Length: 280
Image (tube, rainbow, N blue to C red):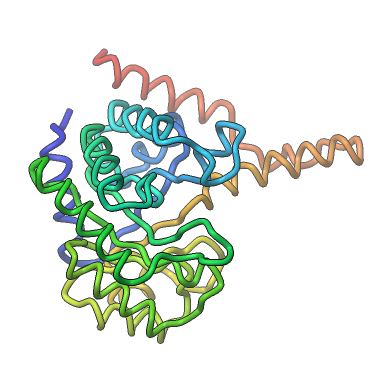
């Protein structure tokens, strides 16, 4: 089992060159499956985890998320990046406190976003966002500094499709100490390339949560270093479940089961996985 320090070092190395995909499980079973497929790192999903707890996205508590992160770290051998929402606080001091607790779970990286969850005032000002990022950086540094910090600019997710402002925010978050920059909602090649060039040499994370026509090779050619998928794997799983259940309820048919995963394949995987986890 790699140590936490080894996982964090490996995670940083992944960001140095090339382009890698960081898939996102929503519980320990899905994390183990993705690890078994050979992915080098995983991340948590605020939405996927919330749905597994019968809650909407952004409704989970800090304590719930910390427990979830600890479970993911303790039950995997690869680096885990935390979707840590807005740090579960408005003020920089509160963000720093939350980040310190997240680092203690053993995560290899964590993101802090600048969304306020307020329809009238959806994002923090650039200055507020930078101050919150600086507080997160200082909290990580006090813990040893090896946890990777991701700075998120949420403009495009909250209806503010302003590329110039997004770039200004990402540059400010970089200056405040973010190691990796992320603007979820960006999907056009020219926008992606502009962000990559603006924050270089720091790596950029690209969200691909819908079929936008981009492949890993396409993203790499644009300079993207890392691709994440948000809650899309969780949504895909829920999509199959809902389609099959609706077909039974509305049509009295079971055709959707033809696309179900093989029980034999799943039993085989988790049998081997349980043996590996127990050291047998």
